[in-house]
Image (cartoon, rainbow, N blue to C red; front, side, top):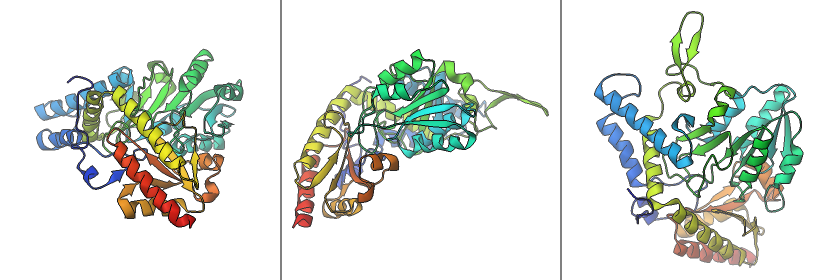
Length: 402
C-alpha cells in the first residue's frame, strides 16, 4: 500500500456521524481497519505468542512481531528497540524504576509535564534523587539554555515532553537531545502528543528512551503503547516484570534473562491490541504523515482564531508554537460547565479540568479557574466542525457575558 493514498477516514470511524470529537489529546477513535485486524486475530488465530509449535501459535507470534517491525520502522528504530507497554505511563515508569538511580543523582524535568512524566521522578526524591525543575516561559515553551543551566555534575537523565498535553506547546526536543548526547546524559522524550500527529523519528531527537501511546496520534487501540529503548541503553535498564517469557534458563539458584525486548515483556501480552497497533501504523502511513501534519496545523490555527476572536476568552500558548491542542477559558465560567454545555448543545466533545498536568496548569495561571477547556484535533476533524465549535462557543460566551 502506498503512502499518501486517499482514505475516507470519517467513513472508517462511524461514531463521528453523530458528534464533533475534539479530544484527540486524550484518546482517538479507532478506525475500522484497526478493529478488523484485531477481530481477525480473535476469529482466526487466537493463540498465545511464543508458546507453541502449532500453526495458530506460529501465526500469532509472526503477526505480533510483524507489528513490532512496522512500528519500529515508523519510529525510525530497530525492532529490538521497541518494548511493548500498555500506555506511555507504563513506559515512563519502566525507565524511572528500571534505571539504577542512586542517592545524589539528579534529573532535569520541565514544570509543564503530564503527571506521568513528573510524578515518577518526584517519587525518586524518597531515595535521595534530586529534581532540577526547569520553568517554561509564559507560553509554556522550555528554553534549551535553561535546561543546560539546570544540569549539574550528577545529572543522570534529562526528560521532556515533545508537545505539552495541557497547552499544546511544542518543545525543542532536538536541541535538548543534542546537548544530552554531547554531555553523555540519558535522555527521555514523552511523545504522547506527537507520534502519529507529526513527523517524528527517535534517532533525530537523539533520545535514549521515547514513550509512545497507541491510542492517541497513532489511532490504535486503547491499552497499547511502547517504549523505545536505544540499543546502547539496553544494559542501563532492568526489567520490572519478571516471569514467563523473560528468561532463557532457570535453576533453583538463579536465572538468565532473555535478550531485549523479551526480557521486558513478562507474561502474556495484549496480542490483539499490538496487532491492531500495527494495523494503525499502516493506516497512518497510508494517509501520509505529511498530510496529517499539514491538516493539523491548519485546524490548530483555525481553532485558535475561532476562540481568540471571542472577547471574554483566555487562550493559552502562542499561536506560532502550539500544535493540535488549544486550551482556553471563558472569563468567569467554570471549565467543566463550558465543556458540558458544548456537549449538550451540539454534541461537541472537549476535555476540561487539569488534564493530569497540575503543575502546568498552575504555571499558566489557570489552577484557580478549575483548569482549562481543551480542544484537540486529528486528521478526521474538518474545518466545518471547527466553525460549528466556534459558533457554539460564541453563544455560550454571550449568554454568560450578559
